[in-house]
Amino acid sequence: MKQIPDFLIKGATEITVKEEKLPYGEEYAAELFLDKGRIIFEKRYQNRELYQTLYYAYSPQEIADILKHKKNASIVFEYVAGSFTITAYKNYKDGIETDKHVSVENSKGECICFAKYALVKGQLAQINNATDKNYYENGELKYVFEYSEDGNCFMIHNYQDEQNDIFGREIGRPGVKFTWKGFEYYQYAAPIIPV
Image 1 (tube, rainbow, N blue to C red):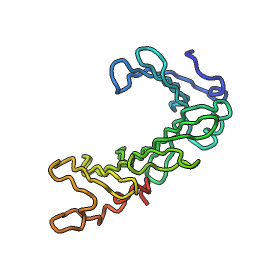
Image 2: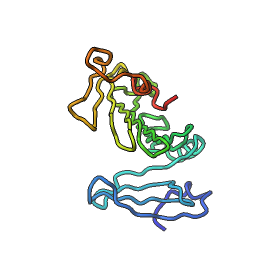
Image 3: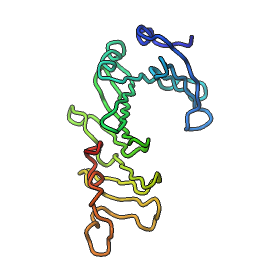
């Protein structure tokens, strides 16, 4: 079997390995290690050279188990909150989470939010101006919302009519048809999961 850390296979019952191309270009590939169809470990290659290993966790306990064995790790943590699937790409150094990227998908599999977090004064904090929220209409991307550092909407990119991009500060002014009614989730960078 291809190389996988021993601590990952202790409770495994049905390990399979799948190779696939990554969407970054021809020279990128991945080996996925699955237990009963669920990814538990991934190796990523560029020009056949290993450049990244990812551990997969589906509960906080699984994250803790990985960190017992690997204090410096990149962990993909996937969980469900209501009807949303959240995938957090978390990086740890000496067992401390240093940064993460989070994507939120709705029940249709559409990515409605992508947010980055970094250590700020010892605490992991959302980077508002590195957060995007996406609005879909009939399965088509219609708007991408971009935010300023203070978390307020900076720009709304209209993907169906590029001539109608809107600055957030213009909403409510005469001649601007867009309102926040029905778009309350998109007005600010937080929260990343609709309430």
